[in-house]
Amino acid sequence: MNKKVIGFVISFVSGLLVLASLKSQPTSAQASTVWRFNGSSHRRATLFFPLTIFPVSSTPRPSLTSTKIPTRTGTPTLKPSPTRTPTLKPSPTRTPTVRPSPTSTAVSSGAVIVLGAGDIACGRGSSGASCKQKETSDLLLTINPNRVLALGDNQYEAGALSDFQNFYHPTWGRVKSKTSPVAGNHEYGTSNASGYFAYFGAAAGDPAKGYYSYNLGSWHIIALNSNCARAGGCASGNPQYTWLQNDLNASPAACTLAYLHHPLWSSSSYATPAVKPLMQLLYDHGAELVLAGHAHNYERFARQDPNGNANPTYGLREIVVGTGGRSFTNFSTVAANSQVRNAATFGVIKLTLASTQYTWQFVPIAGSNWSDGPFTEACHGRHP
Image (cartoon, rainbow, N blue to C red; front, top):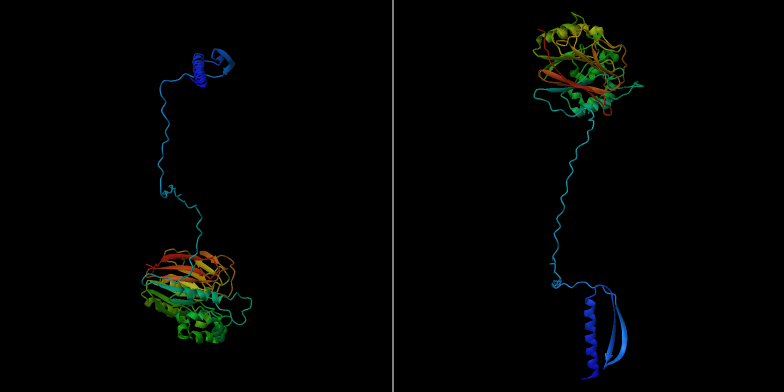
């Protein structure tokens, strides 16, 4: 046998013997081996085995296999995560009181809309005046009433026809066809108020009288001439007094409205006792409401009798509306039963006249906020 093969076998067997001896020692071991070939010593070698010997389990370990994770193909469908929609609770806010804007008003069947004011248009010589007749007349066009009441001193300074044509006509004259006027003291600045009667014609009544009446809806309406000296007097037995008495006796209406220029009551210096006999007739026949001008302000009185005693059941309510545009008059001593006063706002009164009641509201010009109403009051009719 080849010597190299024999040497290889000897070396292999010797290695197995060394390994067998190490298996019996649990710690690091040192071994000296002498390798001999053909009975002679070739080399002495010292072998160190710094080994920690672990027991070998006879149980075979499972082989590790790679698990193939299936791969998803295609575009994944993304489901949006659910989100809670927050419930928004409105934060508490103060609700401002909103003044009703003037609009064309739809009214119940049989009701009519009436607008009115006095002391209206500036004219030649109206220096220092506010002259807001255009602004107040704009309210007439916007609201578009059934009737307009011009409460006297409609054209300053003396009621000349040329001033009516040049100042009143381009403003309040835009609703002339539905206007029923009364004369103020300034109209009589021209002889016999000729400019006033010439401008309004038949709508102003007989020029020798200046008072008349008509029906509007279910209401009876009376226009009085409070320039008593110009109308033959206002006292009992005078022509206008007698006419008014007969007119009221003949009217079957449950609700009556009267208007004139001079007020019986005012908290300024313009109260006019001369018209008291006419007011007494109105009160005795159960009239509801009287409108007046002359004082350049707005003042509303509670229901009262002609002597100034409160009578909430059958009293006569007077409202002064001298706010047509010319200027303002300040208040002095507050009169009895005066409820509301304003001397800083131009505007018109708006009346809604229904069959058994009425609603009033003061409507200011654009840019002003003050108002009065709307308030509704039932007609009381004649005294029992």
